[in-house]
Length: 485
Ligand code: BGP
View (tube, rainbow, N blue to C red):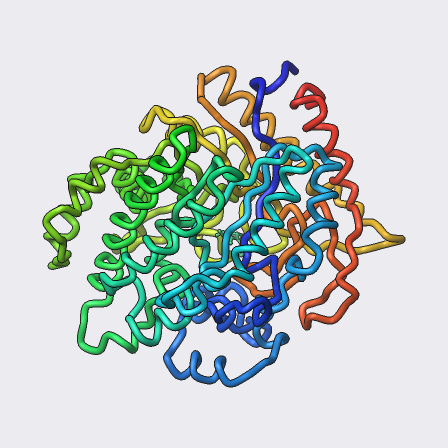
């Protein structure tokens, strides 16, 4: 096989809330993720139950110091291990490392008058460590890390005031890191607020009695669109050659059959993701989203300049996470049946599933790349992809051939998309390049890394790092720029 394009950005990705730990160190405030409790006592496939957070849950969380019940508080202890980890990434040959800045390390409560210097210094050190090895940081400005104060005292992103706080946060970090950071993402999986209103939007349903919660979510979304455009403006003004991307969950939907009803449903479901990237790329709301607002009685309050700002500062590139595809169908009563990343409902019979029931579909990645490139004609970046598995540490390593097979198949499809379909792909960062706490299960045992972290679901362990078999595999892929595939 020939090589990937010259300068292709191979690397890995984490988020502060799943990797760092150090939840109450360095002057950091508490974030929504620090209050997201373990799912050890919840059916891990019961996504609805997992996302039901109440004000009482938060009040209880704020009273406890317990890192077992709130596993994101210890993460992979990256706060204390980042030098060792970046050294290992450098050994694999990473060109880029995607990480997020925890908003609450910079502004502990979101509305503080002055930023926290200790937090700013921490990321200075992290970026310096990356640059020492020639690794470009790719920074997610907001990845499930709003300060908890925004939930309790402002009603999260529903509040217009949060835009101003976010802009202030962006001004501070961009000014501080502009010479160290060239690549930025505004909101992780910007489409996810509808699925995770609490972690993404800092929204709790019981704080909006009597209101249409969907309207609350879309109002909060509107504020994020304006905030994202303003962040793009801030980055470009500070550093003209910097690139800002949107980030979406690429939930690729297939119709379960060729029944027109199933095909229509798949198309409509795809739009439920595209409506966010359409807005961020084209700088305006797509007609089908405006129709939805009208038909569902959703009234979005806008300031006179909002649409102008969105139009003026669209993103430079489109990044996305891709883990699996899903099938959708309509049953005989016209009801929708779906299988998005779960064990339930309808499965695609042609592809296998991971330990967590996420269906493994490398061709779906090529389909996603082609769809997105045809739609936007903007450079693409795969910023999350990987296999969450139950790894076993034996004699100081993990024989994760299953993960190597997963990557191999996905890399080949990326190559096909570039070479055969003409897709402009800037780079690839595998998700959880070092084991971190899983977002959906809040457990360590759903592992993605090339590097094993010795820590169990209860937070017990030495936090020592071990190279898995996939470590050398990925190193070789990067070394040969994909020619070994
Ligand atoms: C994405 C999130 C990540 C992440 C990943 C894998 O939705 O952006 O934060 O964790 O999914 O999901 P999980 O950890 O649930 O396996």
